[in-house]
Structure formats: C-alpha cells, structure tokens
Length: 314
Image (tube, rainbow, N blue to C red; front, top):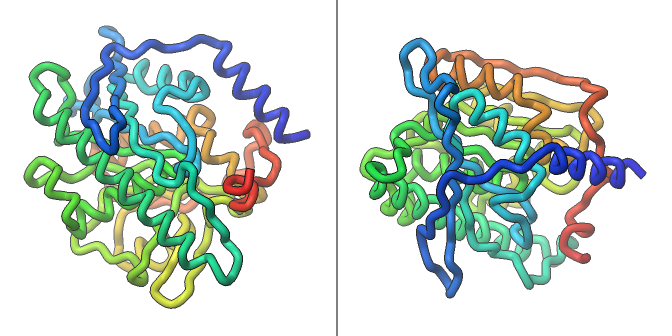
C-alpha cells in the first residue's frame, strides 16, 4: 500500500505544474542513439550570485537502474523549480542505459558477473556525462554554462554515475580525456548512490569535490553500507564516509534516513533545505563544513521495499 501512496505522491507533484527547458541540444551519437541535454535557466529576477560569487550549474543524472528513466521525468519538475527559482541553472543529461535487455542474477554464483555488467553500465554513463560536459564547454558562448562551476547530482543509477564521475576526475582514466583540461566538479549531490569497484577500495589521487550524500539505511536496491568479495566491492554512502572520506579528511555532508529504503532516491524536492545549505556553505563559500545527520522526517514518502531482484526480474 505504501508503494501506491508514493506513486500517487509523484503524480500530485507532476500535476502541480511542468517546467519547460529553455534549450535542448544533441551532444553525442553513440551506439546508434542520439544523446540530448535540456537546459533550464533561472528566471531573470532569481539571484545568480551569493556574496558576489556565481552560483554553480547543476548537472542532473537521472535514475532507473540503468534499464529505464528519462532526463525529463515529471517527478523532478518541482525540484527543478526550486533550483532555478533560487538562481541555479540546471542541465539534465541523457546517457546510454547499459543494462537494458541484460539479464542479471545476484545469486552467489552469478554476482561477480552481474557486478561487472553494472560496472560497465556505470562506465558507459560516465563517458556520456563527460561528453556532455565537453559539449557545454565547446558551446559556452552560445549556451552560457560555465563548466568550471558545475555540481553533479544524481539519483540511484545516476547517483552511482555521479559519484564515480567525480572519482575519475580525481583518479584519471581514459575517459577523462574527454573533459576540458583541468576540469573538476565543484560538488557532488548523491541521492541513494554507491561506487562499484573491481579493484578494491576506491582511491582518490587528489581530494574529491565536497559531497552531499542522502541515503536510507534500509536501502535494498543500492547498498547503504558495503558488499565486498575480494577486490569486487559495492560501497554505499555510509561505507564511503566511514572508510574513505572521514579517514582522509575529505569534505562531506551525509544525511541518513533510519528505516527508509530506496525512496530517498526520489526525494530531491523534499530535501531541498539540506541541498541549499550545502550549495551555499560548501560549494559557493568554500567552507570545510562536515556534517553527519540522522533525519527522521514523517513527511517523507515511504516506498514498498525495492530489491535488486524486483528491479531486474520484472
């Protein structure tokens, strides 16, 4: 029943009014698929700066388990309104769905192969996001997006791409050659994300961008903690903070939601106050604000539990 209540909630959010992109551009053609991005500019009366410092653009990466999802899912419209009304340009980006039509089995004897398929899907998404950033950089005079001032934000699968994209800007791979020289993100906002690794604990060669991590501690779709078998590991928000960020003095804000599962992946509009503080303090003002919060909010929607088997065996 709770699942259907949440679906009704999303419908009501959509019914509150759509937001139309100011520009739509095709930025790449890969595997026979045109990849596009939508740009939402703030209204003219929205504050474009804080303390004389330009607000960053938010690059949004949608969720959907790498099998579904859209850059213009209606449930994000209220969140886009919040961002643009507060002076933040938003870019919503396509990426290839690397697990579409793939069969995954997370049983003991197949988990390693399934994890490698997920890692490949993440890598494909990173490549597409980096291509979008290159396109924005090459067309800055026309589109007006400063790629030196971008916060990447993602939900679920998109959060996995976002976290790993920042990791790659700090520990370069062949994909980072797509980026403008010297590129780095100004911040990362992850809604129920994780990093999947086939080479052990993720390691940053230089300090990552400040991170804002939202996660339910009962999430069964994207792990909140850690699952590891040898060098194969799946590191959720709590594990990233405990095993990497706190140990190395990296800047992070984590919002933990006791009893919540994967519903937090869709709670962008509902968690706007935490985002606003992070953007203003950590990103714009550059403060080394670190916070670890356990939040019990009865107004947040609650989904029926969603597991990997539920997602990939439907």
